[in-house]
Length: 111
Length: 112
Image (cartoon, each protein chain N blue to C red):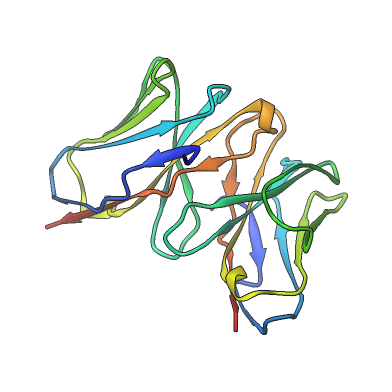
């Protein structure tokens, strides 16, 4: 079983749609959680950290459920520029804060 | 821009050769990690350096080695290159006190 599991997609949605990505992680010692965005053949870029209380940044909302070891990302009012791969990432102090990535979920927003 | 720079951006090597990749960390960041990303996969942790010492290693063979310098820049060395080493190699830097890491643009290595 992979340490971080994501649905690879692709998710193909029209502009303006709301789309949700889910992710589960296996290491119960994980303490930090992130969503990164990666455009084709580019480096991952930090989209947002994920906090237990949930957090929002504009059209993006992230949620964390520690009991279920589950993380989500909601994108409202999708834009063409949101087309990318979204990587779910966890880290644990016990592992030296190394980042453990899921395989990513591809999102394609169509006009 | 993250302030993390890697060189070179692209590289083609022959099987059996050796390669050195370089990374300059963001100002104020003393921790550097290296990741390998194969096509269609998420990045995989290779190792991490803090204050010139390796302080974490992933499931990679000893022919993957590294260094960190006093200015916190870093090198990744790979000996005896294999075809499966073809990938995007990413460097990430962060400060010890912060969990958020920022990536360089990567080096795309092709082994033929």
